[in-house]
Image (cartoon, rainbow, N blue to C red; front, side, top):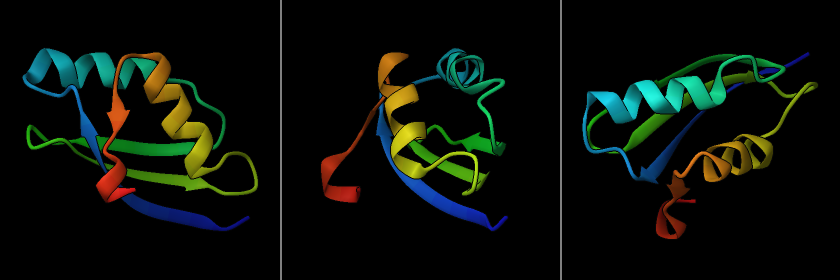
Amino acid sequence: MATVSESIQVNGIRCERCMARLAHVLKGHPGLESANATLTGEVRLTFDDSQTSRDLLVEEMRRGGFHAREDAA
């Protein structure tokens, strides 16, 4: 098990309700230890890379209506 921390720029975060919606989208994702978003669209993820990956987390966010910015991927 290796804990990985990454920051991802995400479109779609405009207010505190958006941040709460993102938390709901990621809640219970296997291997995710923490996810913290800012109003600037930065999402800091900490996860166990033996259970999940950055790509799976980005896909989960995409399904919830949040899109990683390609220039920051």
